Image 1: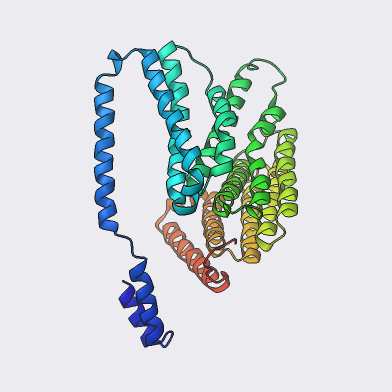
Image 2 (image 1 turned 120 degrees about the horizontal axis):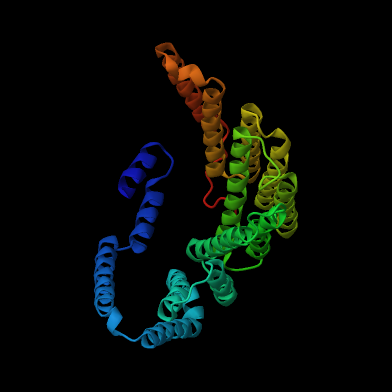
Length: 381
């Protein structure tokens, strides 16, 4: 593959023979034995599955307290090993440290389920998740290396917040005044990771971890705002979960997070992240008076993603810009069908629908290629 690329670049006059030779030498010295690692991975997987099978076959014969003691001992041993070798792993093999942290976190999550199984107890899911966050989130924040632990932390926080919201709301069913504003605040708490990550991203050597954590918070904000815009186009919001008070709280939390991100990371990417958070917050608030209209809900959705595309242009995020263009094009097609629901009931309508889809796709591709920022080695640096 690299030889073909180098030959093509040489014929195009992009590189000379000396540069091509230097690239070949560098790639040869840094080549990874993929086949060997694949064989090692298959062997390790087979051993792991064998151990799990042996344990599962004799699981009921082992006393519960012994199982818990073994589980706890494995966690303590892994945690002690990471504390002893953590700094050396971070310098030499950061992915080894990342994998160890992820396994330790997964063992911690499984321990709570194991504990409930042994003692036949049950509790809402948010309670063990909250306990896990108290015990393991500091370790993850102090040692996390990349997307794996960032995703574990963000996922645990999101599930804990939403499960708490569901359990808390269930306590008030049948009453007149349900605590929707409080539910809105609780489910907005994962956005707090955005300013935290933005602040430490400029002040830590583990930039990859903080970058991924900030990106996950942005995805959460944009996903929630996009769903709100879609819901606004389906039905008019009432005084319940999408009340103005609830949406104002969601939007206010997003705007506060945007201000903190802008203050914590004064770079183009920080400004873009803050703009996206602010746009998500404003869209959540504006969706209330615009709800009940297919057209206005669709326009608000596309306005949100136009803002994301503009922020991506400002920061030089090529992939995000192209994604925003694709989402806008798709929403435009869906909106066209929503406004002309009888378009697909005749052959002529099908022809028009096909031409519309092809036309929008062609325009989206042209816009994406023409205006997308150049590909950078590391976007959002």
